[in-house]
Length: 244
Image (cartoon, rainbow, N blue to C red):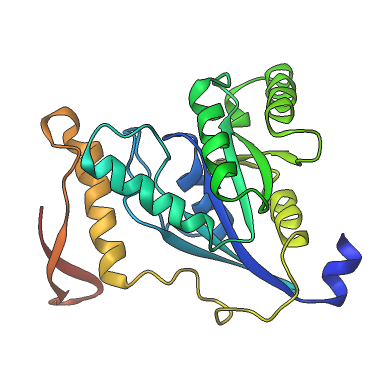
C-alpha cells in the first residue's frame, strides 16, 4: 500500500455514513485538521453536504460529511435522507461509522442495507469511532461485530477523533488513500473546504444556538448572514449580523 502511494498520486471522494451522533462530523474535522463541520449532541445537526479536504504528499481525500441517515418522521428528515442517498453516487469510498460505546442495533443494519441497495459496487469499509471512551476489550468486541455486519472483505479501522484524544487517524487516512483511483488533486494545496465563508459562519452560529439554548430552541432553526463588518479598532475581529 505504501509503495503504491509513493509512486502514483491518488485522489478521490469519501462519504462518511452512519446514524446521527456516531462521530461523523467530529471525524471529518479531525482528519481535515480544522473545524469545517459543526458538532452537537442533538441528532441531525448536519443539514447539507460538506466537503473537507485532506492533503498528503501523494494523495488528496475529499471527505463528504452528510446528515445522519435515519428513518424520517418529517419532511425535513426525508429531504436530508434524499441528500445523503444522492451523495453515494458521487464518491469512491463509503465508510460507515459505529461508535465504540454503543452496540450495533437495527438502525446500523438498516443504514447498511440502504447504502448497499443504492451503491452495491462502491468500496465499503467500517470506522469504529470514540474508542477513547471505552476499554480495549470493548473496542475488540465492536471491531468483531462490525466485521460480521459488513462482511469478511471489508476493512474496519478504530479511531478516536476528539481534539484532546486522537488515535489512528493517520492509519485511517492511509487506508482511505490506498482505495482512491490514481489522478491529480482536485483542490489547491492548503485549501481545507469548498464551503463559502459565510456558510461556515452561519453554521458556527447555529451550532452555538443549538448547544446554548437547548430545549427552548426549535431544532429546525436556520441562520441567514445579513452583514459581515470589520470591527473598528480590531483588525483580528469581525462583527457578524445574522437572522435566526
